[in-house]
Image 1 (spheres, helix red, strand yellow):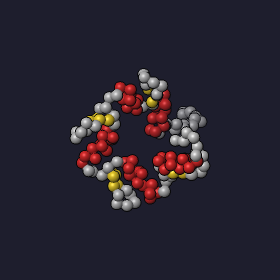
Image 2 (cartoon, helix red, strand yellow):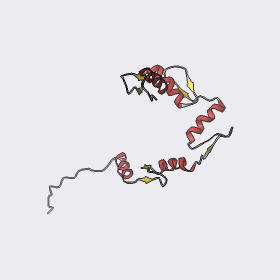
Image 3 (cartoon, one colour):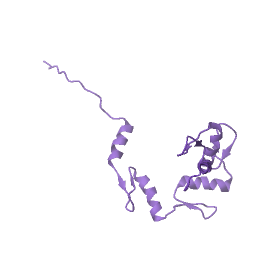
Image 4 (tube, helix red, strand yellow):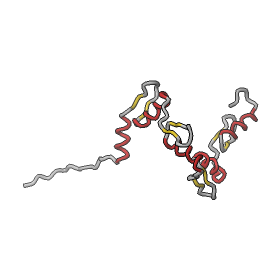
Length: 141
């Protein structure tokens, strides 16, 4: 005769994202040169390049060297004339992601830079700096 149990099983398995958070939250990689800490080893390795001065990515067209592969790809676009970053609002395209971001502000109206002295918001840091000068504050940015 089988004995009946009143045990209720709950599925407490974690999603892949929850498992990743749980394992990376426990692992901290400490920079041996400064207080910087990273949860991912590759992030620490990239940070270490600041201390060693190593620039493992070199341009085949000139003497430019950098610490990041994506920076080298964008730099090479200057030599080749390639403009892979296209605006979704118009026909504009750019050789650099940040240049496209700046261009897109014209379409989106984004104003990410907030004045610390009033409610003014600027689309870029340079415009905010010019605005702050209107406050006539000593030591302005």
